[in-house]
Image (tube, rainbow, N blue to C red; front, side, top):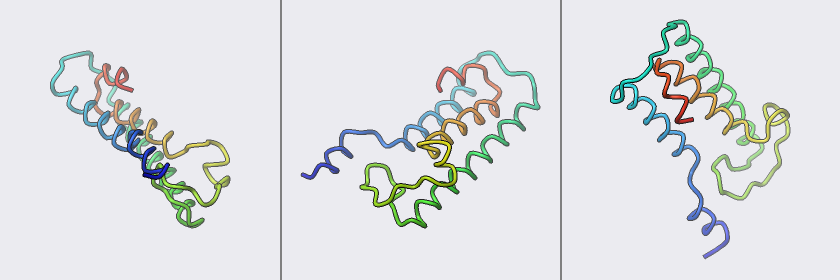
Length: 117
């Protein structure tokens, strides 16, 4: 068994962790009574955050593809990307997953959602 297959077997896949957190946030809104965020304008802010996050993550992934380096975590990179969002953040795709969760929390109008993040 090579090094990368051992690392892949030991480490969690970040997009799956994100998806589990997002599903838990949505489920919590329907299952657990709790404080509701009253401002309906926050839904627009949340949707905007999610749209910006998707755009930035798409740009970041596109840069990887253009440089012919793998987008998937735990694969051996072939090129160091330092332009675009990578000029400001070491991991903009992961950062955008967090921004998406914040946007989702604002959209579901439930105060307890921020505990999951």
